[in-house]
Length: 75
Image (cartoon, rainbow, N blue to C red; front, side, top):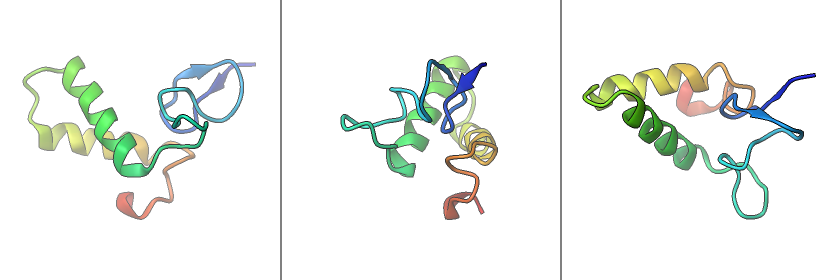
């Protein structure tokens, strides 16, 4: 059975969240921290893309993830 992180969709061995999405205690990072890190990842993948577009893409993706779909910032 394939398990994916409920925050970012990355394949993981077990649990709900990957190590990229958790803090040092294994708790899900705050939305703002995760959002900024996901936008930064998008910037590395698509250099030159306007930040507003990257933010919109990240919000749209995060809204599909179980950890974030009901977050007020994505409403």
